[in-house]
Length: 165
Ligand SMILES: Cc1cc2nc3c(=O)[nH]c(=O)nc-3n(C[C@H](O)[C@H](O)[C@H](O)COP(=O)(O)O)c2cc1C
Image 1 (spheres, rainbow, N blue to C red):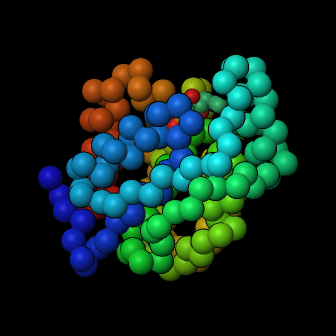
Image 2 (cartoon, rainbow, N blue to C red; image 1 turned 30 degrees about the vertical axis):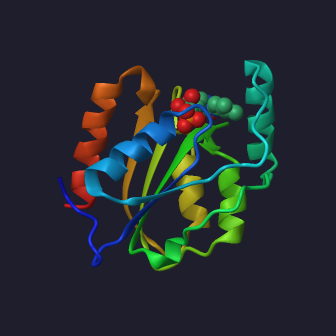
Image 3 (spheres, rainbow, N blue to C red; image 1 turned 135 degrees about the horizontal axis):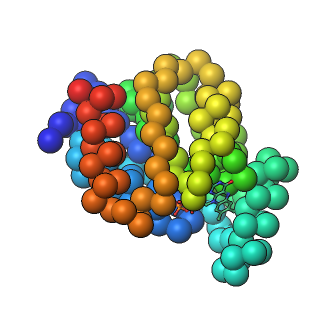
């Protein structure tokens, strides 16, 4: 097990609608003893699948900033920031629009992961465009990790060792 020491403080910032991105955040946090910050919108998406996909998709397309519950950690207090998101409409989930508008992230080492049903689309590309002035150290795409937990844990731990040896 590696360790997130004072010389390399690691924060995992994630949003998770259905639990996949949360599962990966917890896997990483357990492996490297990192802090976590879960972004939580005040209002959840509708429960019914069609309305959920429609509402979330529209929020991405129109770059909506859903209101977030207060959070108590600041990425600027850390050396490395790992950002995890579900893929929504081929990009990162809309709560990150709000987060990026509220928090400055500059001069950090950044690693990105996403959980998708099919494909990452432009998730990493779009996140990197918003997070200019940082150093990108890794990307990980996982398909429905809750459907193959053991394999996903293995893949995640292998990845984390390459970015935080
Ligand atoms: C609003 C919405 C839009 C989605 N759009 C995509 C997509 O464009 N491509 C894809 O592969 N999966 C898409 N998915 C599936 C999720 O990315 C996938 O279920 C992911 O594992 C969910 O992560 P979570 O459990 O952390 O919320 C979408 C899911 C939702 C709710």
